[in-house]
Length: 449
View 1 (cartoon, rainbow, N blue to C red):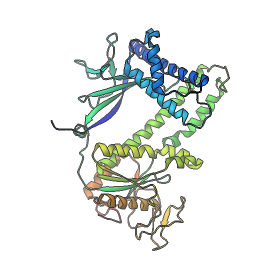
View 2: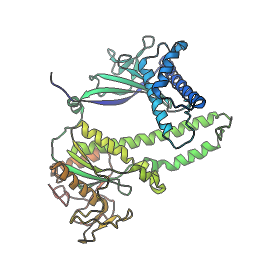
View 3: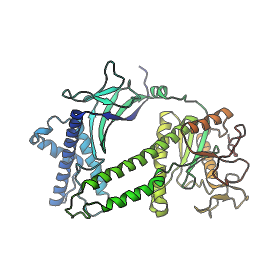
View 4: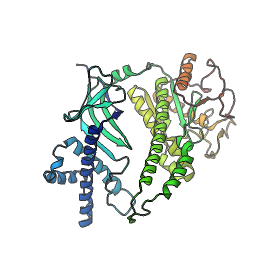
């Protein structure tokens, strides 16, 4: 039998529940939270009495020995228990390696907005189609009716590995993990995957979000920057509500405080979703139009240490963009090259190769000290990254055909990406307005094909 390459993909679907189904899921959330808090209690008590730091596996063995004492946990699956203690292990490792002196773990509260979840394997639930019904349904327990899935399943014919049921604010979701062959994945796409030799170098930055060596510049969505004033106003209102002012304050949270907290959490969720959607669209556009992509290894932690850059770097999500491009390149069998961390992409002249050591972060135009050449700083870096990739792969062209360039621009328009074109024939970008460039003349000024 022919061996196929497989990949694992997750789809997050929205669930529509009745009261019985909601009660069942809330009961499962409670059991998962109880097991987690049991492990936290064992960890904290051991740390307090003997100073020993237990691992998640040791706490799991302790729970198995005493499980018979909790009769309401008899129907809980081994998969759910295993995932709970995996999450506990991650929390322990994070706490142990943190800088704080207090190594005790915090308990999960029932009112915590984003902590409710449990995992089931494919043997413990199944996705079914009911005759004369357009939607799919999830069967978990025989005592409750099948749960309706609002969204359309992308890979309904592929085998399911597991499903994670989550509660975020007042909504319920299921993250279904599929095992998909690459051939099946490509067939499910709404666009053809072309086997071209088009390659691109990408430079990302705070001033210009994404600059490509093909002359395309994509602007960031910046959802946090657009909604920061509203967030500040809501947080000021939240501070006026009745709530505990310190850890030892016994004052309970008022209902108005809880309502406003949910409103703020919904706004944060919307910001995250807008950011993820923009990153997904950019990654899809680049991977479907280019066979090889090169990016530099950015030090995101160093950027976030500086107060002037921290908020903007978080809003632009460079790390998430690079990871998403990596994943999509792997799925579509594209080449992804990551330049060395110390590669001087911005300081190196694309024309003569001279390295300008005096270039600072605030210089937006690169001026070569050797040959006097002037070019936009980020565009120079993108061209250098393309050249780096060309030397690594020994193939690739930066010159797009008119039809390919037209397809790239129409793809950006279709996904509603904000972009502008690098004006060819001028040494630098004077403004961020759209520049009318004919498709026949559009290519990288320094074509190494």
